[in-house]
Length: 392
Ligand code: NAD
Ligand code: MG
Image (tube, rainbow, N blue to C red):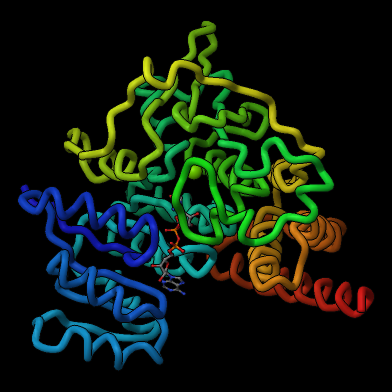
């Protein structure tokens, strides 16, 4: 049986890993549509490589370059918001949601109404609008398959057990490039240093989030929504080798773990195999060659972003939405050298503090979530510019 796939964020790191896997299994998959942000030439390349039926760029201005790059191929194309919607609406079985940031929320959510399965990499969607998103998916009978490596490992480690038998779910973190740095060294870190991830090769935003450990914080919130497990049963362990991705501790004392080398094709294959194992050419895990796997507790004093995310999860309401929005503003400013590394967590904390007294409830819909996201971005931007004025 042929499975039809749509890739949102096809030119990114997860999108390219998905394309690599699909190219190895042409007999099993057909690609309905590929979607990118503004990188028309790269999108045309992946559309041609996968023989996609349709390609869409979100950025209207890139439409012309896309149609020129696809001229004569027979691949239909479009640009702008409506073209992205068209891509999601086309007949398909599984939507791989791999746009980065809150920009992915609406297109990913758009896959629910026509009843597609969603292989979810875009964790920001769930951090921003988790309860509403999962409620809508459940109501439509749409499976949300965890593509993020930790959550995919947790799903595999859980097996057929009920979450009521789970005492704890533990997500591992590599610790990022600053795992052994002092607080002063981390405060002086440059974008180049933060972008040099020790074990994973990923897009810029998630790489910065991994360096601050905000990524693990976002993933705790993601796990809460995906598995319906409350914050008290979720934990983080730093594991520099990135071999064990998630552990499930059961109430009888048994612990199951999901292991693989750090290669996104492994969790992607699990999602796209829909119950069957797909062969991948990922390097095989050789534990004798690795020899030692180590684990340590995360240091919340050096990595306050993880603490802020835990607090947002515990506080509930609109706090995760606010945290996520402020973090996107902070990461963007850090990459543009308008903010120091230590100020990423500080800006997130300050933005969350301004919303804390308001008692805003959890967004009741994606529309609500985007309104809170918008407001939080405005607040974070204001704090950012007033801080810069104060500093200058
Ligand atoms: P990336 O930056 O490499 O790619 C992002 C993709 O999104 C690109 O195709 C880009 O063109 C597209 N895009 C950006 N803005 C867009 C917009 N407004 N509309 C449509 N498309 C847009 O990012 P990535 O590392 O592939 O990560 C993608 C998502 O997957 C993130 O949410 C990340 O947290 C998550 N994730 C990534 C990895 C990984 O290994 N890279 C692992 C787990 C989860
Ligand atoms: Mg992950």
